[in-house]
Image: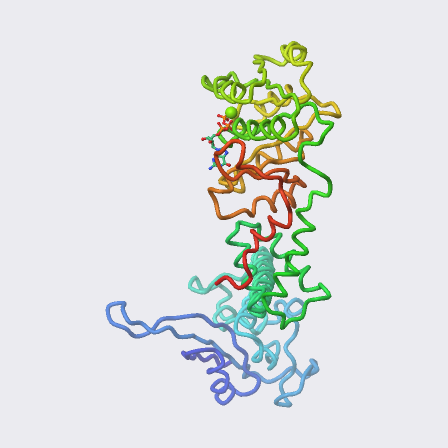
Length: 435
Ligand SMILES: Nc1nc2c(ncn2[C@@H]2O[C@H](COP(=O)(O)OP(=O)(O)OP(=O)(O)O)[C@@H](O)[C@H]2O)c(=O)[nH]1
Ligand SMILES: [Mg+2]
């Protein structure tokens, strides 16, 4: 056997040299990265070391040749069946030369372990493994390699999906891209933006060339349908008790005063107040001030047990507004506490009060807690303090929470209006020609 070492830039560069020097029957026994040249360990160049060999012994006449090639050399026996055949076994299969470097070196290593002719020469000459040679690859490494390949395939798939998505985004028309930007700025969740754009693209009025005006019109149509409560959400005529619940400082007491003033001044109903907010020192006084201004009676309750007494005191009232303490309603305990105060009869309504200045994720956390207790209507406050009103859409989509009122300032009773989906959507989308 003739063994030759080549130092090349890459394995393909060695192939013609091996073929011309060792012939068509040569096999690559091993490849590895090496560093050559340089000075004091610096500026060394990366090269590939390729060990190739060709069988020089006469062929065994009994073994038939499997593939074509030089014509006289017999085929290399299979690694498993040829264990112990020794150097005189057979010539290597020329096809090995065409394998990828890593596969060829793997094959060499495996064959080396089995003692086949593709093992390095000195392995077979003295019967002992050279301590400098890497040990034959164990089966467990094959499994590890397989896992690595699978992982690479998975990563490639994820990358392709990402590329496809970014390609889609690139191909989106300027008008759709503008809409996406507008809704992102409004804090609308990505999930609903994607869904909206999918809906727009299947709308009969849509064409890929559609300009902003058309896109905005279709978007408004879809969004209005999404946020439309479907049924009246404001205080109906037959309602007798209205509870306001919600986190600290969102404007519950102020909003209660606004709603009560509307009932007293516009609907001419007899109104009463109950407050259970004995938690904050000034809370009772705050509501009492509004009660005095509107000239309505007020009861204070310290526990759910006192509710019956309070309702009895206010039995001549046509509608009773009940204020509750603002608490950290991310805490389940506080939510269940306030819910023990809520009347559940047909003629009772509960509104969750949420400030639009809150972070979407916090609003969603509180909303999902109250939703578990059957609260479905929301009063959004402090719209005057923010430009982004996307959370209204997010909560409508995510938790099916219906907007009932929007408050737009501190003035009692003026700064409140019933929620209107068309007005909301117009504000959310802004003008289509805004730049
Ligand atoms: N800018 C603005 N401020 C508001 C609005 N509604 C209420 N506020 C103000 O928000 C602050 C808190 O209002 P409250 O009504 O006391 O809030 P609350 O939810 O009852 O507070 P707690 O009872 O302490 O939980 C007050 O300064 C209000 O004037 C609104 O729509 N816009
Ligand atoms: Mg309050």
